[in-house]
Length: 252
Image 1: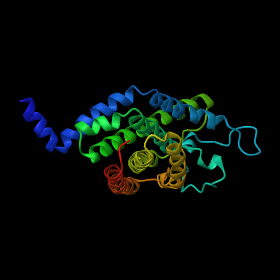
Image 2: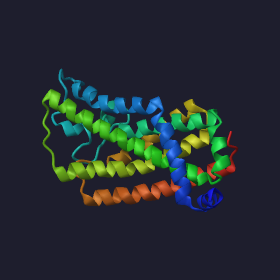
Image 3: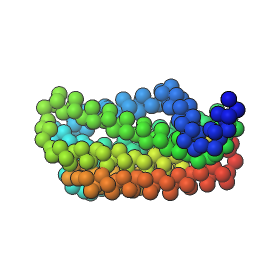
Image 4: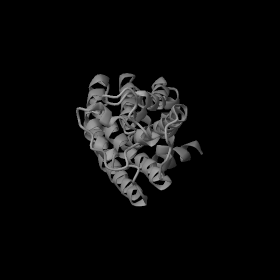
């Protein structure tokens, strides 16, 4: 019976990925970096809300949801940190977590052991991408909780269109698929070289940063649909590149 199950599992991608996900999520929940990133994501809104505006003695944020995104497309100056100071920073945090997670797979030799059991490289890519997306969405949630608590404490306005806010957050969660797949590709390319992986994670994260701003507080169901399509296509294309990298290069 066990042999039959192993045979079925080896042929069924859903069973294989499910098995890989169980292992990855177990390891993720025992990774201190996850909880550090979640706490940082929750604290950032408070820091931004108390940060004085340029030439001002108090914060320039008059509405708490400005910490999430603008009412229109962001026009951030690449040299202006404040222009990037919103929930989109979470995309890069998710990338840093994946850099740490995958780099440890290589440095510990775990990745070689896992491919002894799971011969399909794209199982690894799918699992890591899902873990990265899930972690990123968790950071979005803690960021929102931090935003709400900070706003209540500071007495900032919460006025916002519910449809726009919900559509904005859903779209950002869906766009996380592109970012998580990209960061997995970067991590498997550089393998155990964590510091190089972190550098390129920042570089590519900043290059794609404006993508997150298509989901602003003026978003609607069309924005959600666009984010869904972009997320799906991006994840498939970039995931294919990651699988190709794993197939063409030595594991260690």
